[in-house]
Image (cartoon, rainbow, N blue to C red; front, top):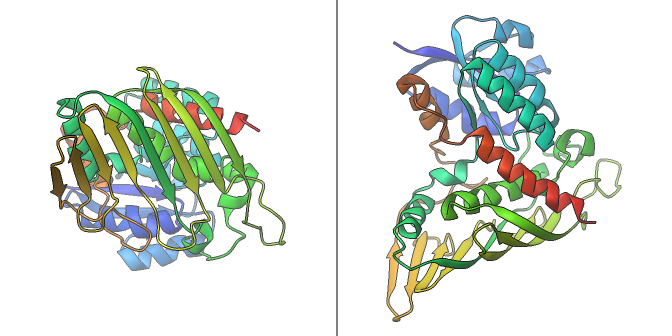
Amino acid sequence: MGFHVGIIGCGSITRFRHAPEYKANPHVEGIVFFDRNVRRAERLAREFGGRVAITLEDLLNDPSVVAISDCSSNDAHHINTTKALQKGKHVLCEKPLAISVKHAEEMAEVEQKSGKILMVDHNQRFTKAHQKAKEIIKKKELGEVLTFKTTFGHEGPESWGTTKSNATWFFKKERSHSGVAGDLGIHKIDLIHWLLEDEIVDVHAFHGALDKVNEHGNPIEVPDNVVCAFRTKKGCLGTASFSWTYYGAEDNTTTIYCQKGILKLYHHPDSQLIVEMNDGSVIKYELEQIQTNDNQTSTGVIDAFIDCIIDGKPSLVTSAEAIASLRVVEKILAHR
């Protein structure tokens, strides 16, 4: 017996990730779409065979809807996700969880009171290469982790968004708040926390709007590039770069340097994880292509979210973990 899910916000993340993955899940009977622009919701309802809620209240009051994906813009997460939890829905919220740690902590309080699942879409944990790397690190097959470097960059959200326009909400401070730091950076911050079972505590960062302009031809008000130096609670050191101006192939690579060798993630198109040992031996794992804007494969997040609901399991990406990553983003943005 299946159930219905609702999706708030009908932009590209819904069209390419959430809607197709819900449609493919055997437990999901139907999808109810809501967007402030009803035509967007209608288009996706036609494309995926779902139905449309005219208002957010209609969606949240629908007793057949058990779970919600909050795919609204960053500034609306704390409003929409909070309302959905209060109405007794399980919620999968897009990242970042909120535009501030304060808002995110308030959401976590509502989650506790509701007894419902709040999961955050930090999907990089679910790729096969990252899962294998975590297993190797956890077993200390290469000894302790010493340092790391990670990057996530592509040519920008205007090339991926629904309108293909630099009027995108990602460029607007009041809606995006954190620019590339909250769009791409938070993925890698969460990944490092999860891979290392550690937390970034010290942050030194530079950020700027180097190239992107808005629909009026003015530089955007949020960063399109960030470079950082990090120190974790356990004493690991690392660097990170996040960019909306990699005008070529997307870069989604991470390197973990350990006492007995190096883990290279997504450096090679065919060998997604390469382990280089200090004795000169090399192990290449061919696992799966990473999901990119040009290579739409299943993230595995929707299936994991649905499994948690059905099996009564706790969230696989908790609000506490999402808040820890958001705290790092706030520290990055505090640097001028």
